[in-house]
Picture 1 (cartoon, one colour):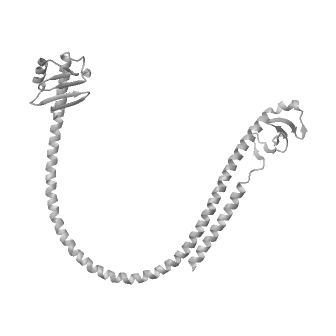
Picture 2 (tube, one colour):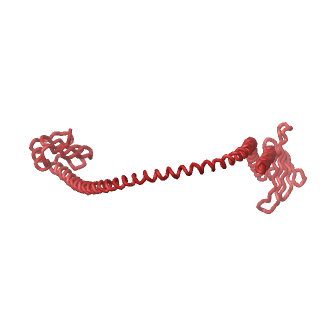
Picture 3 (cartoon, rainbow, N blue to C red):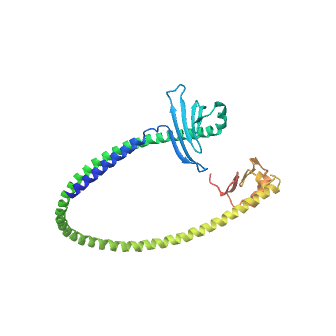
Amino acid sequence: MKKTIFIRGILALVFLSFALTNRAQQKAVRPPAGIHRNTVDGRGYHEILDVEDDSTANPPRTIIMYKSDSMYNMVLVEGKLVEMYVNGRKMPADNFYLYDDLVRRLKKQIEKDRAQAIVDQQQAARDQIQAERDGQQARVDAQQAEKDALQAEIDAKQAKNDAEQVVRDKVQAEKDVEQDREQARRDKVQAERDAVQVIQDKKQAERDAQQAVQDREQARRDKIQAEEDKALVKSLMAEVVKQGLAPDEKSVVSLILDESVVFINGKKQSDELQMQFRKKYIKKAGYSIYFHHGGTQMGVISQ
């Protein structure tokens, strides 16, 4: 019962919050009437600026009241000053040029304020949309509160069922004890099997360690062989340049040397040169050296 009263209290707060938010947002979207500024300028004067647009006139007029060190009343038509009062005294039109700087400054400020007013109205419109969304969410929350109240009643019934389940659990616990004894027996058997597996794993680990030693040795031999192959190719390239078959090593784009032929940059060389190179660089039967654009293959190359 207490829980139901608490939920209803929350519901009332949700609806009250929605109503206040909605009222504030509706007030925010009302468009501003003209422009009103009340500030203090850099000289310490208290500035007041009021602007009203008279759209009933043809052409429309803009009426400005500006107070700083003096009181200025102006009328603009299509952005042009047509009437001017200073401290209540009307200024002749031929003196308007004296106030050009003031008029330009005020027009710039008015344009800035109007632009800001448009931004504010757009923000107010967005706030209005958000307020409507908040209202929808408040209704959803109210529905959820009702569901929570129903859930509380269901929970009470569940608590009763849980108490009955405790009794059933006690009976089941006794059965579980017996099952645990049987499981312990099976676990013991499995542990014995695991001990045997540990011994087998240890032997396998020893074999793996021996293989790792062999792999390291093979890697060492491969490294030595790679260094020897590199030195052999470098010596061969130097010999090609020395024989005048290429101006320098970079000029050698491709090279093929085996037991029967030698090609340099796609051109077959003489048998005499092939025999000379074979004697010096071919290590064993079936051995070949193939170089093409920086890539090298050496040894007995499978086709």
